[in-house]
Image 1 (cartoon, helix red, strand yellow):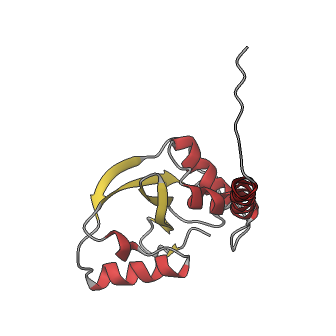
Image 2 (cartoon, rainbow, N blue to C red):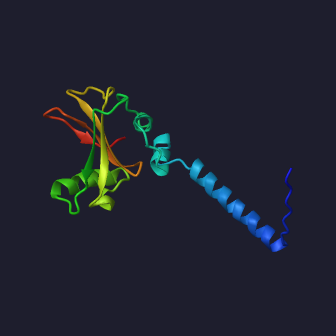
Image 3 (tube, one colour):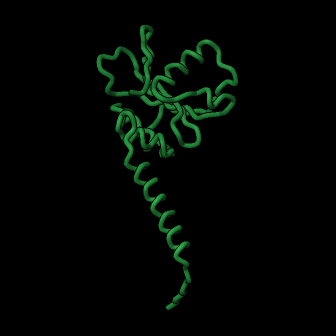
Length: 155
């Protein structure tokens, strides 16, 4: 058995206790804070928990979407350094849901596309797109592939 004694002054002991208290408060605030939508998806977005297909499917399910377990497509894409009008308009959609692709200009990000199975009254195929950088969702949308289709945010 190994025993080690440590001599602490009152000042050092108080500093250690304060540091531990601050750390615990930070953990409680982060773990206990619900996002605007109060979902696990929001927490996953914050902590970067979308490392696997299962994580991304869970993220989408927490937003109410039932998707296939594997993406129909995954690819690396380059966010342009300067946005065209179309990209700027798409980024406005992203900003409305709390994302901003302009922070990733010039970077390669992963795009994962999943089939949505539970979109109400959909004509044609409905897809969920997730843009992921360093295991964090940085944007996404739900859209229809029909000629008279639609596109909106993930919620």
